[in-house]
Amino acid sequence: MSKLTTLQAAIAAHVHDGDVVYAAGFTHLIPFAAGHEIIRQRKRDLVLARATPDIIYDQLVAAGCAGKVIFSYSGNPGVGSLRVVRTEIEAGRLAYEEYSHFAMITRLTAGAAGLPFLPMKSVGTLDLARANPNYKTVECPYTGETLNTVPALNPDVAIVHVQRADIHGNAHIWGIIGEQKEAAFASKRVIVTAEEIVDENVIRSDPNRTLIPSLVVTAVCHVPGAAHPSYTQGYYDRDNVFYLAWDKISASRELTEAWLQEWVYAVPDRAAYWAKLDAETHARLAVTEKLSVDVNYGAY
Image 1: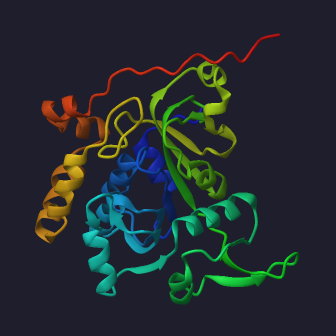
Image 2: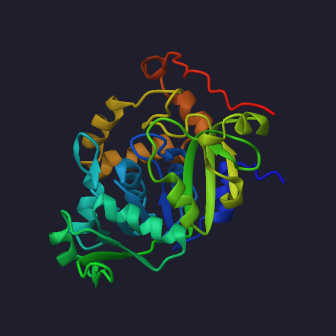
């Protein structure tokens, strides 16, 4: 059965006020289009969970969508702090939980496995463990070693951007792999956005790239350009110019609100957003072809 729908319909149906939302992706494949649609639909009191929130959560917090963030390293990658998130936390207007990168992934891994918690080695988390009461300890039943533990994370909805998917939601990802698989399997509902919707035979031709299977997918949406200003390997490059610009925009509430009005509220969808980017930006983000070597899966 086809799970293909529009992004507008998917967000309206599957993201509810108060939900725990996990926008997956590490450095690339960050689902900005879905984040912007959440802003347009004025969802409220969301708990935004993500390893490295990136500027997508800065924008969602600025738009008033969030009541809490759960994160590891809250920063504009390569630039500095997320100004809006930091300001709201320091003002006491935004609740938060902070973990190490590994602890966030461990929480998702526990959630995906149906476990209540998982243990971790005590590496680089001493201060976090003191500050965050969700870090506990357990004695290893085999060695007697004291281990840190973190609770499972089971988001209400995970949003994953991929290079290509079929209409059932089976999805291919390549390039840097983040926590997409763990987030999808840990979550109650999963929205996939894809650069391309392809025939299922294309997906079957390379099963090792199918990180997200249809059995965990709730909705799949065709949304080219959905990851900008992050990148999608093989489709467009990272927009470093924008990441630098956001640092200045987010320093001013007025500039931030003006940006949201121009680039989110005033555009109906991602196609309009992409068209609004100027020709110089399109040219700067263009990538050349670099194909992988053929793989022979054999035949009977």
